[in-house]
Length: 214
Length: 214
DNA sequence: GTCTATAGAGAGATAGAC
DNA sequence: GTCTATCTCTCTATAGAC
Image 1 (tube, each protein chain N blue to C red):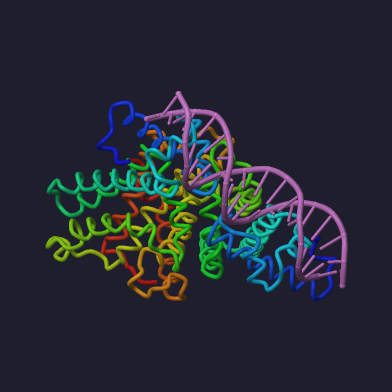
Image 2 (cartoon, rainbow over the protein chains, first blue to last red; image 1 turned 60 degrees about the vertical axis):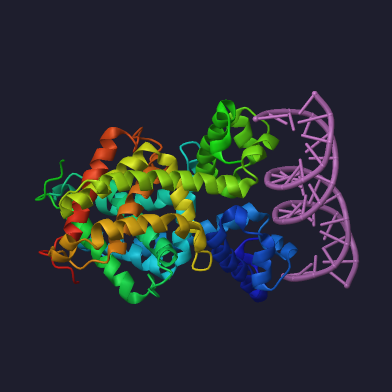
């Protein structure tokens, strides 16, 4: 049942299911989440979920589409502003950190997806990350000013991996590894610190005046 | 059944089970792995696994203990050499990258553990990471030369999070996100590139001559 | 739209033979 | 030590009432 042919109540229920699913899939993974739990959180019965999503897998895919779609939109908006190259890169990193901070559940979902995606079972994530890769390529790598800029020749994939890996790891791991401190990595202050660290790291990676070889 | 009271054949079987379990838990997660699959890979029957590990959970815990224990030993050995502070830090990072490169399955396991460890369910990972945190504290943070060194006041947890996050993410994510390239992130060359990137990043984070505020 | 009831598959655990 | 056979529980999916 697609979202756009529903009445007001149904649309609300569907949204609530999606929201509860995102949180639970994020916290416990696909296998570890029971439809029962999702239904309970929404306040309905398990069987009602299938009115909106034909099975568990479809619900999960809908969560992925929602999460990655929202980030894609945010990134596209950030890159649409016609900024100079380095500022555009900064904006991309910044948008990413803000997004992860705003929806920390996403961090865990990405962590799990990456762990699941072996060399054999690679299709799952790719479908959702591809549009994002295309966006970066089109709006950064293939722009004339990128070729003109005298950047260090770092593999963009390494850069992306560092940006994605650190943010996701920090948001997901910090609360678990620091039970004593009451530091919240998604607080505005912590996110800002992390964002500045990341921006510094990325800028330096791209700086051709620094030696890039071993 | 502990490893030290077994005969030669049994000891071999137990080791094979542990090895197969590490690989499968890493690739598919705890829930996604069937004892059936582990047994099949070893060439025995499901019921025989229970002779060595009383249940699935115990087998999984044994895998964790093995993985984290081995890394702890490697790190302890690296830090036992009485090097100057900055070289000791380099050695720690280097040991970590080598370890992840040598046992890429570990990367996925850590990814999953981090994703599982919410603010609520934090006990699981902590038990295994604590000795490692203690080691770093004792051999780096609490040494007199650390206090004397004029390092930037970065949160060590941020540093650790960046080191761990990038390596784990790179090793686990790269093969999945780059189906076209036949780049293997665990190849000696790629690992070396990554290691140098990481060392550079860490050194700069700790360098007090760089501004650390936004 | 949401419910109750139930069917059916999957997988871990256990008993006991060899 | 390793096997076969079986028990049992959990959870998804389906049928159909309201």
